[in-house]
Length: 362
Image 1 (cartoon, one colour):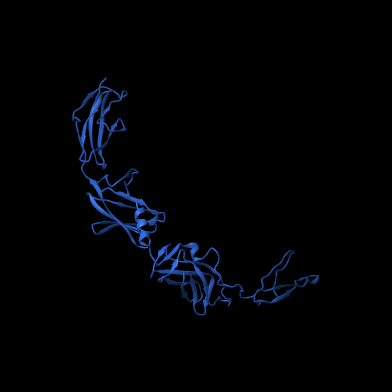
Image 2: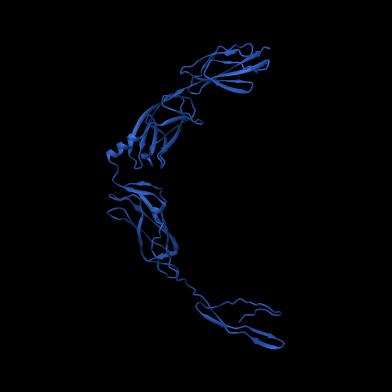
């Protein structure tokens, strides 16, 4: 019995301890006051079993390796997550769909909720999207409930990873087709959207971005070499895109080698990165003060080993660009002394800047 309290009216309660599992108990309330003792109606309740009868199940199947193509002798980890801790009697066997011969790997469990094993790809194995065919073995939870090894829909290996098993390799025709699809990389100065080619010139020690896209190379690798030394590697994304950054002090010959997702060398091609470190020569601007009227011109001369690209001049805090070797003084310029900065840019981006003082006459 338990004491629910003394005095007053209303609802009373008390906690019962030491009850046995799977047992029906009968009880009634008892109340005592100065008038005597009263009893309530007989009621009952049942306690639950101390053990669960729910079978452990498979929650999901996954792998720690990334999506991609795997060939002979490569290892793929297979992991199985269970709904609760289980212990096995012998091996838990994972059967994989791998073509004509389905491969297996095994693991044991001791009061754990996850197990894993390694599948080693063997000659002749093939799968466009590796998945688990079945899981078998005897295992129980702490309440001795047997494992339900049904693989839940949407949680198999193929649902979370795109793992391709290919032990045959590409044919010569397939490799040639990929090689033909590879386009010439695009170059650009880092920080600029202007696309360049291998005929373009770049500044010394400035980063150059090299990129391309070939869908057939998805999952592959691109290596950049100078001589026999690899200076950069770029992984090809799933959409076939790759890019890397390079920096050279002088004109340098590079070799680009392309590999597919299986590691086959597809193509190699040599290019030259043209570096121009010589600044333009800017002449014709006097060191003394120029006296000019509005509407008159200021002119100069410039030359460069690779040619002038454009000019920039700064006047009264404003910047102007031109391809001409002169500019006209605006009609709205104030009378007085002004400082004009003129810059000549070559095709690589090298520049030379000079200033000239101009006095605008009334």
